[in-house]
Length: 474
Image (cartoon, rainbow, N blue to C red; front, side, top):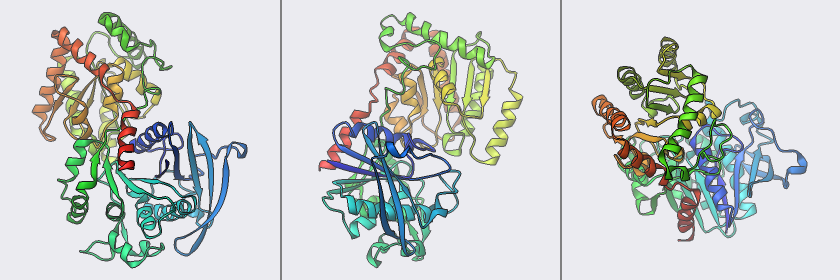
């Protein structure tokens, strides 16, 4: 089976969030048994092309977007995946000067890329074309209007239903879409507005989300009734498939960043397992200037954005100070107000023996925190899938979560973690923290059972890939 994914980020090349990681994991698992290709834009300022001798092909092609255009497709293989990067030769201003993936004119840029990608797919042929989020939503309409050879199915995965790609009819008219297919993207209430996600929903053969609970939640999303109508119309071709994590990348067995590597098998003698985590904790505390006197260690490894529950993060700081345990927050702030608030907290707590706030993300440090911490707190307002709770469980770090989306699908309260429900209830959140800390301190048998359940949780990529293959073959 030949599968082509189209997206605007792919973790080995460039990423801004979970989409790039999820696509990488899925493509890697599929490539074991199927011809798998990932098509993304080339961002010259953000990624350097492989050397010419490492490329497997360089193709020139034409596409239509705001007139006849030319592009170059550079292809190479990475871990069995064919990666194709598009350079828009006659529209260089769209990507060549971009210093971030996302800019203010994303709809136009991504539509131009989608037009080029669709032209390439029509030329190359594929059995399955798999789109990721709204960014490449135009591809669905273009391939429905003019299918490629051997095309069996267009699949759309919603990594975050909150982002939809609102744009103008004028931008859709710049493509080769005819009036019928433009109408699939158009809003009835405002015919001059088009939504790339809306058209992609109608023009795809199957729609997936990145967790079963999130698939149910988006059917209850009435923030835009026309988008709600579109997702409701597709509900019989909608399925939630939980993302997996690459256990060859995320795991304490071989992680080179840890002070002490350890394995799940060590838990046959729990004291040996916890001694290994204690060595990692000691090294981390020395690095961050924290006191070893207070336990447990709770961490938050997250973007600091409204979606991630920053109001709960502040409550966690208070709870840690009041109950004499360690809290480490690491992540980048999104938004000036949040950055100012957390920068002030960082400064005021700089000499605290128990709390550290780190506003510059570091992958190496994050891995050391996963290994050292006893718990990871994820109080998201919504969470399509979430990977940090699964990574935490791989490291024997117990998740404390709000029961939403993929967090609800992966964490069972009192079994392999702790959870709360109300997105605005500080009392319930603090009760969850108290229960977790008290269990750690006073009920060692139960704590060991919870950690064991975390280590036994299956989060491999192959399970997710097999579920996608079921959809491809339907």
